[in-house]
Image: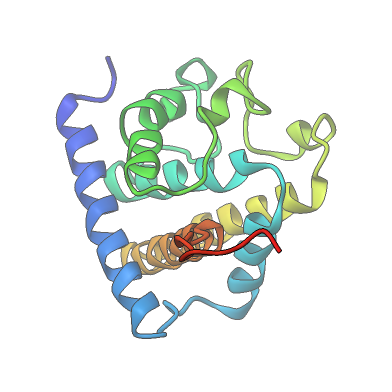
Length: 184
């Protein structure tokens, strides 16, 4: 296995810390700042009906933070020496985390539109339905690759986690029990 168990623990810790900051920011009405174009791109990723884009984005950010020499565009180990195991990261860290936090998510993005050894590039775009959401996802990856520092990547993860908090809160419909009512 190319990624030792300690990497999963480190990724989980980063995710926990980021979510804690994002949730505190949500309740204080403070959106984690990122460049305007990335803010807009994240908005498109989260507006997409394809949940896989936002879930895979978390894995890419965690990979960038825990293994900066890996290529975030290569989520299958067979794609090259610098590839990472996106599906394993999702199954062991990201997906359980999202479910524990009651965030609406899929059962696994690598079992939906990103199956079969795909790379996150233009060649994958042709076979996807939501090209706008995918283009926004690629724009965020471009930002990561274009010299974003570790601090930039952490701030971006906080921003993405903030959007997950928003998603959770928007989907949380409070029910309350009615007192005695009559049929008339």
